[in-house]
Image (tube, rainbow, N blue to C red; front, top):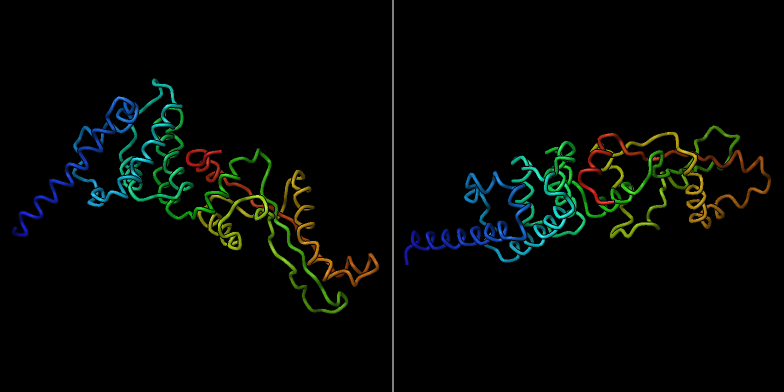
Amino acid sequence: MDEQKINALVNIGQSKVVEKAYDDLLSEPSKKAGTALGTIVNIGNTLLWPIKWANERTRLYFENNLKKYESKLDEIPDEQITEVPTEISMPILERFTYVSNEELSNAFVKLLASASSTENINKAHPGFIQIIDRLSPDEAIILKYLASLKNLQGVPLLSIKHHNDPNASSQYVFIFKNETGLESKLDLKFSENIKIYFDNLESLGLIQERNYYYTDLEPEFDKIIEEQKGLLENVFSKYTEQNELKRARKESKGMYEKTEFGELFISACIEK
């Protein structure tokens, strides 16, 4: 069989896969999805789907993510279902074919569902797609925690420094810096990277480091100090007088706070 015929058969096979996917999409349980994604279907954009749809694994990813999307649509009243702009629907549906991590796929699903609702479409910025692309699964877990926080709440930041000789001109040395205590609260796969995660979330404009904090965070600072008790005792136990300890130990408290942009992103993309 010559190469041209082989390519023709491959194209037919890919076409059947795409056709089957759209049959599934427009089946009885998927009428809301058909309405929300109508433009893609109506203008014949099936030709634009990637070749990787012919891969069984990526098809499974797509079907699982589509089911989660349909489940989210069930929470939206029929009269609020609206057609998703193609600049949001097309790239997200493509990502449905290869994103397997639960936290990240949930973010794409939530964003697509937000764009499918007249009540929330104003929150669904196309740029959020690229932000999700730049998140690690652990960072998505941190954002889920941030989504659970009430107004006037943040993530505590505690740093403690030590001065061997407070009367000398040498600088203080950090015992620890920007501890949040979240490692003990969240099920992170790589908890040792938590400071890098916060750096990335800040670089994306989702959070901002503040040199102040809300009084509700005082118990959280106490918990961090308790978690670091062994380290702190090892450094400061030699100071027996309160005034001496006060000169040798220096604390700084602050917090990470969601930005307005971060609030919008979390509202559109992250489940509480």
